Length: 160
Image 1: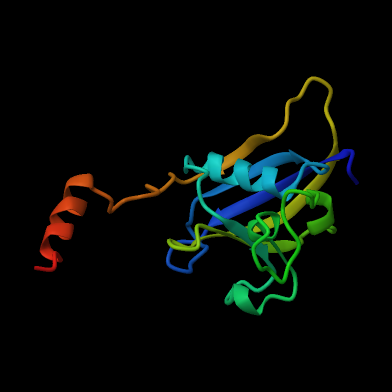
Image 2: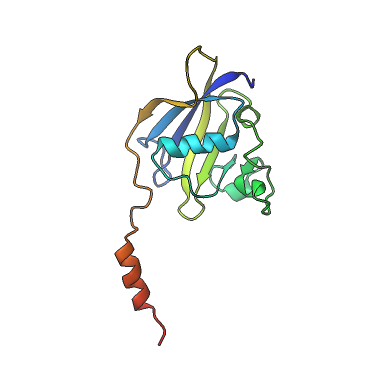
């Protein structure tokens, strides 16, 4: 399976809803790591790749997952799951229609439902990873951040 191309659909859930939510279908090398897949997903939604993340099989409560892969494990942090840097995409998505929750940024909790929808051979001359289908606009990653507001808020909470 390492020598195949996987088509993985990533749907960004909005307020827990999938219907009508933006999605990207990605063509990725199956032998690439879950870290590479995470970068590709985040980049395809125009987000900065600057937060921790994990892949989980429990879509409602990632803490109750029985299968998962976390960046924390690669950082020598405590984790009940293996890391993402040495786990191949083909290891996690080991059958067609396999779904995993991709949870990005544990503060803002961006949730993507990911699913392996197709497996194909590499096409000569094609470069991977790439976006092969897209719908919906990317939301703003940091919609409420305003540097001036931050300083004003700090002044309100000063201790005298």
